[in-house]
Image (cartoon, rainbow, N blue to C red):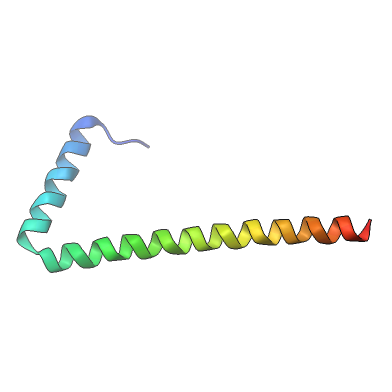
Length: 62
């Protein structure tokens, strides 16, 4: 469910205040987001590689 414009504005304000009040925590949270994104990309690449390998094996067998 998408956020309304007002909810997006409020969320952005909260993020800005967090970064101002506790830059260390904001940095750690941002780092967690980057790590999660890296894991997701790595999983996607692994899935694509597995599918390509499976296709190659099937083609070699037939």
